[in-house]
Length: 113
Image (cartoon, rainbow, N blue to C red):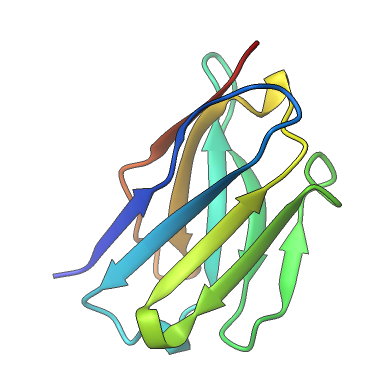
């Protein structure tokens, strides 16, 4: 059974930081490219960042320079470090296995003063 479980969401002030984690089970994790997506109310889901098995990463323009995706294959976990958070970063963040199309349930991130 494949499971992706996000953690680390919450409420943060503008300019603050959070780190999301996504723990995977039921797959040979190191062979999967992973991604973080987000969806705000009334908005389409967007791809935030990706990382392949070797650690090569991509980012959307909206988070470039502020967010960092990383992975620890020994822990079957992918991370999203979010710095300099803005109100417009508020969304449900979900992790995803690229190509295989498995999803986590999502973690709420709310940026508000």
